[in-house]
Length: 185
Image 1 (cartoon, rainbow, N blue to C red):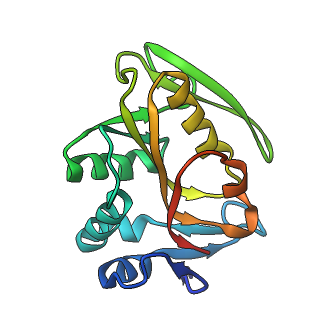
Image 2: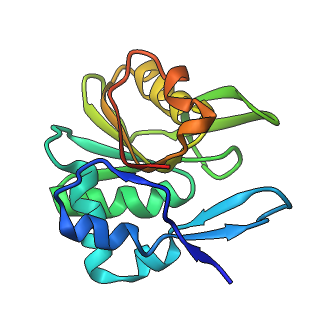
């Protein structure tokens, strides 16, 4: 049976709606493999009030022209943020998913290598981009997303996530970026 997330610090501590949304995130032990504690945001995304609270908090106080959502849960969150703040959304994809690629970046993960690709004709030089993902863990994916945006000549306004797994030290690997997490665990 999944357990409720308990050992967290809600960064915007006075936001009652955000606290309620965070309580919907479940901890699932030993998924996808033994020893891993998976944080499942699906119940939070399925609840309209929670989705609104998370969406508002992810973009609150930031100025941006477009949102870049990182595959895959970052797509869901990024699209919601873009809609709420009246901007467009760009999906940063894994290889082989796009017919036309403007740029790509490969990066190291704790267990191998991965690549993100930027769709062609979606980002303009000088645009202010908000990078959105669900979790900041080791920092590899979020850092690569920010570098990919900068390689394309755009500005990363901020990289914002729902949850930061502090013990994995990912924030330390994303230098020169404004990184914001709604909760730290």
